Amino acid sequence: MRRLALFIAVLVTMTALAQDQSVVFSKFSKALKLTSFDQKASTAQFSGNITVTGTLFIEFDMAAPERADGVNFAKFVPDAPSASRLPAVLAGFYPGAVRYVSLEPAQAALEAGFGKEEAMRLAHGREPFLSKAVRVILHNDPASVECDSRDYVSSEATVEPADVEQVAMGVTGQVEVPHGC
Image (cartoon, rainbow, N blue to C red; front, side, top):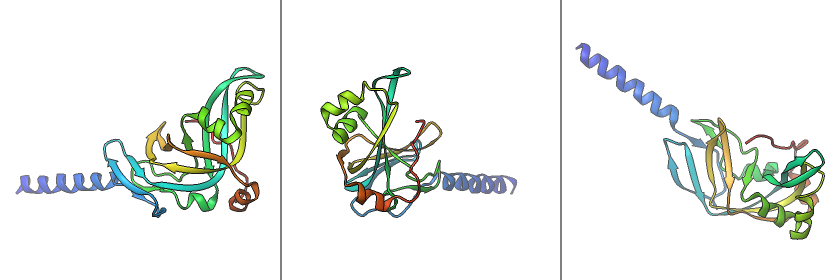
């Protein structure tokens, strides 16, 4: 009887732990499909194309206090209507809203948003950050855990400048520069 009680207690505990690791996504655009989910790494892969608007933030690698030497990060912060169409992790391992989507390679995002010549000038300019209203088409994007937080990445995004008024209508409040990884 003790063994049976111990077995049931272990089974209940393991079931509870397994449920803790399950991930619940927000409602998201039907244009995206969850194609795979790695339970161990809590990494989801989505396929499909979705066009969203928001702000592209570029962080430069500052070789000196007043001289950039290339691009560190390109992060896309969706406006409120666009964010509601993306799959955010609501529950489970490291839940988190889609605060931004890292665009990789960052240099390609800079060039697409600003043009190749302007991108070259900016990547060696004086400013550590810059931003621009953009329209982004996301393709086949993963959601994973990096640096102890939920991370959304796109390595196949199409970036183009957007009508500033269109993007501004979707922004609620001041958009902050996303920092960290």
